[in-house]
Image 1 (spheres, one colour):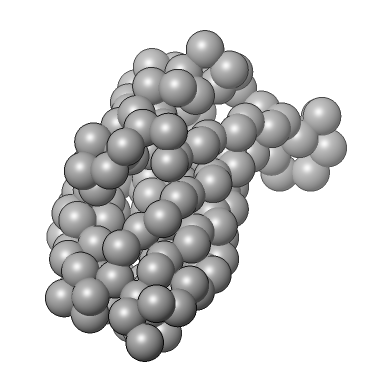
Image 2: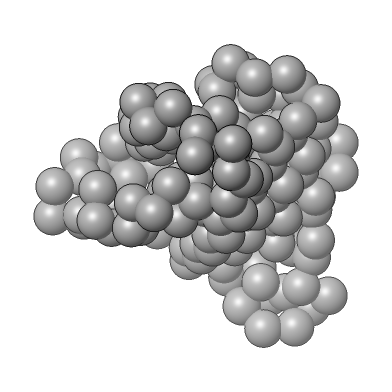
Length: 160
């Protein structure tokens, strides 16, 4: 077996006047909206990129180009389909580490729920998924509450 590392990132603008947005498939109730073609789940988008990278399958834009994504489309579908691609290649996701950068709302109380939801979507043990939350400390678009960003690192095991 060979173990491959994948890394992915994503970032979306936020605007006031919304009813919240999803991260890791969990809806955050807040007065912001994410600006995106799909549902704008930056954490899942980063994770999809990381998984595709580990499998040598390009990036999220190769598989889900903006001109073919349904407005408000589910990022969970992207994740499920990407996991199925990895399984079809004989791969198994070993673990996932996600970092979400968001000033508000605070994610500390929701991190375990977010990690558990990713594990549920991918049908893997909860202990193999970790979510960390960071703020922008009042600096830049994250710190000013104008954006959300995420980074994902994954290990995927493939047959030789």
